[in-house]
Length: 81
Image 1 (cartoon, one colour):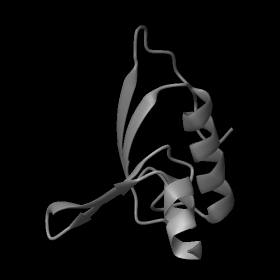
Image 2: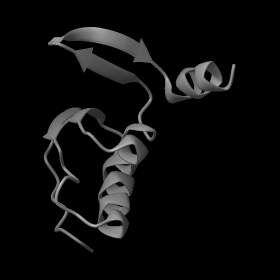
Image 3: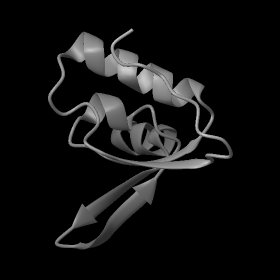
Image 4: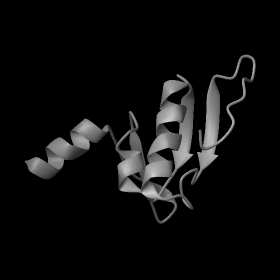
């Protein structure tokens, strides 16, 4: 395991600022899988599109404002159409 898992009683939300930023792609995938498996609401900042695609909603900021807010499926459908 890449990092030690701990249990925090009653934790329902986590904020993560670039949790995979300094990791190779295999380690980043492992971290995202562990976070996803925890069943928490996670607010994550990332510049990695492959990490963002695992989210239920992607909110893009442009010049400090919300530029778009879509699900990855909607984003892919828009790119295909």
